Image (cartoon, one colour):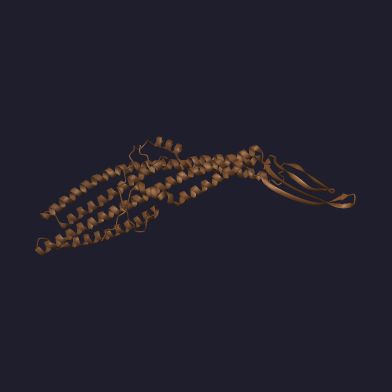
Length: 402
């Protein structure tokens, strides 16, 4: 029987597979496409129109009332005030730039999310394995305690304590297995794998870079982040919309040209026609003034949103810096704890073999080692998450490790 192949999945592969499927990215791209179409429409202005008209009107003649029949075929176009058209085009272009920046931001947020999902599955898998090893160790102590009890070399309390520890280890293993299954289900969904695919996860390569000083990180973030650029573009778009609204008072022009043919006063006529109409708005009801006020409020809103975003960026960068630094310290501390716990467990096992320690001391040392190993795996995963979060908070490309 041919064994089933296990799918291997690296963190970078998970990111590559997940991003094209992310709903937020797809929505941001659709908004960018719509904004690009609006920009094209604003630059083109109103499209020329082909028209055909026919008139049948009474007209006096020598023999009494006769009919005038004329038809005109031509082309017409409306021309807005040049400044108004330019402002509308600027507003559309700024909106398109903001939409493009939001695509980048959506990709960054999705990248961080898949990093978290991948690392959660990685940690859950390792902790499930550690829990299984802890269960096996507790079972070995229980078996040894039973052997000693039957041989008369050990007290019953060792058996009772080992039995309780073994049951607790089984419970912890069941919880770890359930968390592993849940974490892998989330990863399968994000990456687009079949349910319960449970790929083999590779140890992620750490992002190796020096954690920057706070001021340098803030300057980098405010200068590089896509959502900050989008907020700036939103302000420019709002200001251009305000200019266009103010220019709604300006006159507009309709021009048409064509060729007329028909009967006039009983005589065949034919020739070119030209028509020009000038429109000057009269804001008697205040409609244009209301549009200007609405556009002015839009500028104030865009400015307030930009300031709120800048404050959010500052807080996000400072939090990411704190998380990255604390994660770095945690990893080193947890690594020392694992080394000490492993040495203690080995010593307790050796002592129990020679009758120098009790089963309780062995079980306690083993549980401490299991807890320390689980904490180290969690700390290492948090360090990976924190470094990705910091790079994304700064607006940097996480594919590049300086």
